[in-house]
Length: 164
Image 1 (spheres, one colour):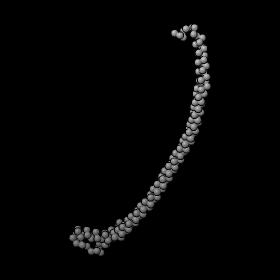
Image 2 (image 1 turned 180 degrees about the horizontal axis):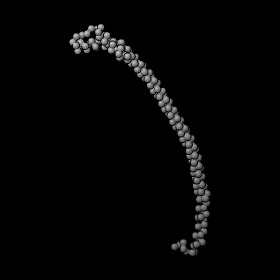
Image 3 (image 1 turned 120 degrees about the vertical axis):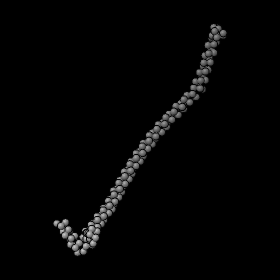
Image 4 (image 1 turned 135 degrees about the vertical axis):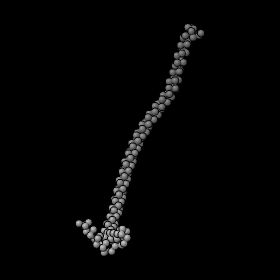
């Protein structure tokens, strides 16, 4: 193998140095600047992307805060509306209850007045009813209708004993 031939080592070293120097110049002058420029551009893009992401995060935080504020405001408004509706319903119920109580009280007063009228009428006609019932009973028992004056005297006597 020629690389193990020690007589050609000097020429191999010479060509190695020339090839290394040529590669060093080509890579150092042509490839590295391009690679370095790509790395710098990439670092700038990453920096811009990070700054943009930070700005978007800040905007998202602001949007979340405004969303929470709007949500709290809507919740407060709904609670206020519910409370107001409940109060209105309670007031309406109380008003209707008062109206119904007044209507019932009027009907009760009317019924009491009717009962009083019937009682007064019954009391005024009580003597007449007692006279008629007594005359009817005596007629059924005896078979002959008694004299109206006699029946009136007996009913008056019974009523006076009852009153005393």
